[in-house]
Image 1 (cartoon, each protein chain N blue to C red):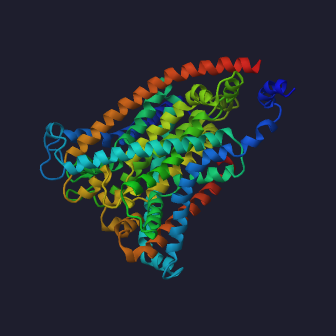
Image 2 (cartoon, each protein chain N blue to C red):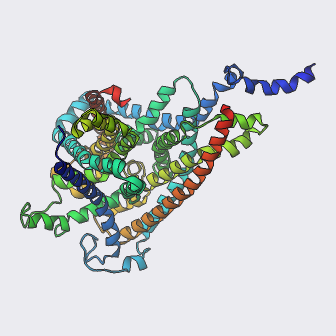
Image 3 (cartoon, chains in turn purple, red):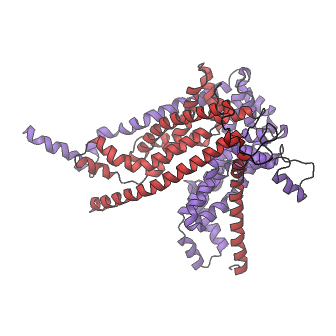
Length: 294
Length: 281
């Protein structure tokens, strides 16, 4: 009897799987955890734990007064950082949205090729890209020459060292991060909605506002985060293209991270940078309407 | 209510012009990078165009510190890609194929590193290493890069394999295939394009990363760190030579993978369709 039962017992659980999950439930609960464990532990130890270590360190020696010291010492730098990041994000939207729109709606069979062009800058190292941007803005370089001939810049004026140099480089470096998510959300859009709007006597402008823009909000949201966050934490662009007048939060951390004594304040500064960005993200999500982002 | 046709034509044209200008904006520095690999700089800095020269290309290894840094970067990229691709793919698979408690929390932990400035990630990791007196170098760079790469891999794999027909696995098992054979013949071919894309992304991110790596590198120099260290003394033309060479290699690789991937996915699509039809009937 037992011998006869063996083959049917081997096959049956799999047959039953469609109907109910009981046949595999004993195995199911730990299989996903086995898959997650290695990567999850890595993130737990080297991502979550360090954030606690950073938070604890930021309260050493002076406690919460570390934060007030850091804010009052660096108020100009903090404000400047967020102004630069905001301007470069807005500039990236102004340049990136139409670009993503054209590729997604009018790209036709060249869509993938155009998209590849947008990604191409990523194949050159960040630092080298920034150095090349510096070459373009160099005294005697093409951009300075053009602006001088147009009379926007005086003959002895230069761009390097100015806020414009830093903000333009930030915009340039993170622009693909703006274009790609907007492209993805525009690409998914059902174009027949626009036909329907036109049939119902909506003007193209109204149809754009009510349909295209609305449906691309998730992409716009993602693109804004992916541009604003790295821009706010950056020190490369302001270090390579800026001057004393363009110092950003990242530079203060970069200049001092090797020094023992500065660590509590420095931890407070980076923790604050993170907190301010998180608050900004939440406020921004509220403004755009969270239900549309999810 | 509708604007006149001529106005719409102007709108259409200016939209195109604006988009092309956007592409030019993205493209010009890349062009400059390539162009200046053929420059003969007048001083120590390759910042101003002087005259065409092949000196950088005929003598690419002139600065051993730069060559060593590039080799070091490639070594790190290989190790990081291997570790992060495996760990991230497993996580991505778990997130797509299974329902389990705390799935939302795991998802949030996966996204969080992508929404944090690199300087915070890098500096917080540094405080951990300092607090346990772990000296920085090759190992800590690997740890740091795998940390942020796992999120990218898991997210990429997750997005690419969502909506696959996992009943194919059950079909294979039902037909008597061993779990290992099922994995090799069904699961792996299904997830392969996503995994390859994620691995390429990780390799590129690893070579490219500067901020997190710099904070946790100690005295070891990757290619970007070496450039950073040289910025006050000299910017030789070899930096552009290496960058251009890497660009060309990446583009060729990307084209090869896309072309190969298309052929493969057409085959797989056929397989899925046939099996879907038979399983549904």
